[in-house]
Figure 1 (cartoon, rainbow, N blue to C red):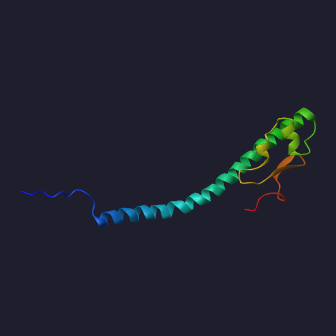
Figure 2 (figure 1 turned 30 degrees about the horizontal axis):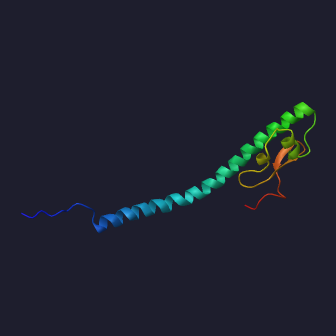
Figure 3 (figure 1 turned 90 degrees about the vertical axis):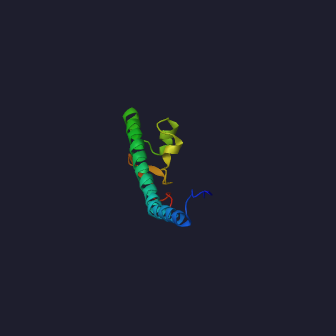
Length: 108
């Protein structure tokens, strides 16, 4: 008796698996790119809240708001990296309020 080794996948089975994987990739990848924009936006809002809290702490200790973020950096309230959002937008102080500097911020 001769036994045939019939283990393995047929070409059709392999093509079906590749098609399913391709469809999943096509559906998932576009959703990931829009999520990164949301993450950067939320990260910038969180950074603004942190820097605003440090600006208020500076006000409580010095009875005046700092003129620039460099004053907060030099007095160790924030780090130099905290002057810029993860998406590249630069922060500035406007009358004691932290805002995104629209003149310097990167195009989105």
